[in-house]
Length: 596
Image (cartoon, rainbow, N blue to C red; front, side):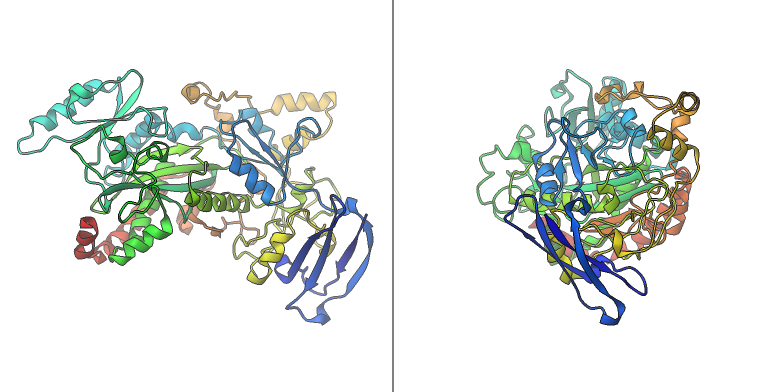
């Protein structure tokens, strides 16, 4: 089987994919394809087209994904849609994959042995903020260090049974306050999700628990739409904790309770909890609900439009939510240094009737199941944009270490643009030349070519650095990827990072904290999330928007270790500016909305 090979010789810079239309047509022959590549919007004087035949072995291999058991089905669907193939443990080498997705944490040895072409979907020790008791401790510590004014976005919390005496004191103090109506409390198991085991109470005699729980003040004045309680599921992707790099997803889910909010019936989970896993079994789930519709979900887009109808400053609201995300993630820094991994969090945010956002919890492995059409729309696109954010290059399809004299060029594989950056060479093992697909006219054609991609090493004469910089980490990486002699084995044993086992159980987190040597180790590889042009995080990828670093000072404070004090100072400046615009919210609009 032969394909047409088209070589472009340019007088100036190499042609990028935004100057191409790629049309893909599958033939009747299995595993074969015909590519027709057409130039457009480029003067004919700038090119010379030469064609000859070549064998199919010159076609780049597809990217490969590896799924652990119980991985969400939609992950497989999306990756197959993009032309990826699934890892076959019987037929392929253990390192012959590009993305490994699992529900549980990876072992530290997996992070130590990561290859340049690979990505892991978990960051070591990210569970620090996803267990409710861990999160409460971290936020309490930050509140004590940097002031309650900045960290007042989380309700007062007590970890039971350890904080039982403190809780009794607070409960009694509130009860004895003259003219103050007794408040409401909510009790949650620290390691359960999907609304399981939650209890709402006002009288302490109703508090019953048989495991470690967290008791918090219950927000009894939530924002209601047509009488129904709601909260927001915000998707947050952290591509690195050192330097701290945070993206929030512009689209997300607004989750409604399916019965009207009523403090007189605290045991009615369909009125007080917004978890779809609970409400989909309610009698009103499939019924049309005035102002809400059928089901129990909206998109962020619909919610924003609803707020704007009533004159609510939704931009200010989202700025406050972004501040919550940044401050929460700062609470768990530093985490162990790790390369080529990311973490997708699900932040649950509740908005009260004064339009103040509250952090309820942070979810590890946010649910990717599809309960309705809105889930399919939001989550499928979310996963596509995550793959774009991972910034794969064409050389990653080879799944081989770059060797001396290699002429392979690290170009981007994606179909959609990942930002305004111009292709430039960058130092380091993951040196790459990025190709952006900014021309909207080329998008359908590029998507059609995702099954297998024409090898384009001949499109450019640029080559990457033959060797990585000779830092400790890069030397260790080289030694790991070539046969060991006895002398090499001795040197590796001398310099090797301490092996730390990472059990999947989050309850054992405190027993596998890395040693200081590992925590202080610096990664010398070029981070995949940085622009090749200016070595800064790409500002926007699909619907993912960079929220940290948010200015030059924050960027500098997050390099070479996170300077939390300097970052907090910058956040205080940012909050001060946001408070000035708060007066633009009209009380009339807010009052009307909350009464609807």
